[in-house]
Image 1 (tube, rainbow, N blue to C red):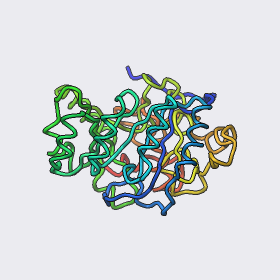
Image 2: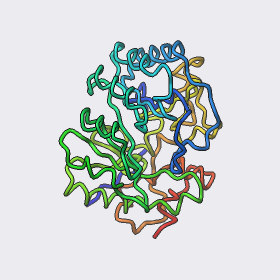
Image 3: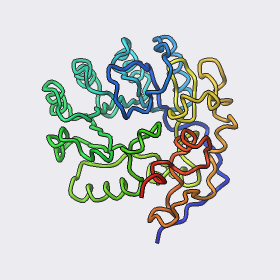
Image 4: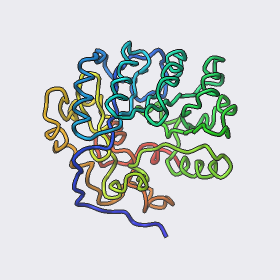
Length: 320
């Protein structure tokens, strides 16, 4: 029997569990599935501003920085960022397209995995020799986008089943109508992941807890709409904070600036009240096998497609 998880009256913790941080929005790729392709240009954060942010996060007790982009390895001060994070006792995960192998090698040689984790995106059919050598040697996390076109890219075959390598399939974010033809409904993605896990020990899926909450790591997600404003906040290079990176393009969801505003005001911004409340799954697909355990999908994508947070997830309602 699937547990009905309709709950209200969540009282927020004093802080999020982690911050999604964007040191730069620059990238040397133009991936058609990128969720940040609509963002305006912003100046990279400088080392002094980053140090100030790090001290704020440390004071708040936030011990994990999920570093995204853009391509983080393009920031000229990335090694200094990592060194500051490590020596202040925080942890970081860095998501990269793997084009700067020498830099990744230097990071992996210097810092233990328990402190600095690297996730390399593999979405092409071939992996360059130097990147292949890095993967085999240092065994970073590997990630690929799951889409209607490709479930597992050929490039992943060399690493599936290798002890020490974690492989993650990411449920594809869609940003416009053209993206819909490449996406699949969540229940199909979820069931495919369950099937793959039966035969491939080192594979797993990554998806927003706005679908199925990750109650093992974050039991507080049981009674909220999605992780925004509960376990995470997202941070742009200029210090602006948002509920989630998918809201970066909408200034009406700006919560404040961590370099200027009191974090308590940011954390208790009334915008976050919506994300911290869950009454029922509003998806019209009531016959879905996951309906009673799902929280309704991604409210950010509902806002992008339907201009409302309360709409259905477009990836589910636009497919059979």
